[in-house]
Image (cartoon, rainbow, N blue to C red; front, side):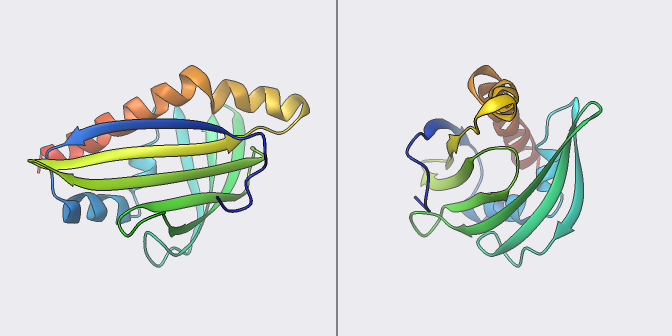
Length: 156
């Protein structure tokens, strides 16, 4: 699990999308995907994108929660099997964040699963990240992301 601390928590959301594996991969490879999957009122500002593929490279961005900026650097890497891909926070607000995007072919489409392993920092930063990146906010974020993905891929 890439040197995850002992106090990690897990979150998972799965959903079915009427699309192909090729189309869902293409959607996630689009440099605009992260911005398109960021729910309002959060705004994503890209600083650096050195991804060479879904499984290689780094991206650096700021998530703006109103006037509050949260800077983040993530490395993209292979997931636990051939189709999944993952992004690992290498610099950011949490003590640990690994997000696996798992695409599995299913009858009539693709089963999309987002699996998050996370750990909060201690102190004030940890309190703040619990409000933005855990519990209900995390469930709402990934409900939105699945809705946006489904909407984009089923309208083509």
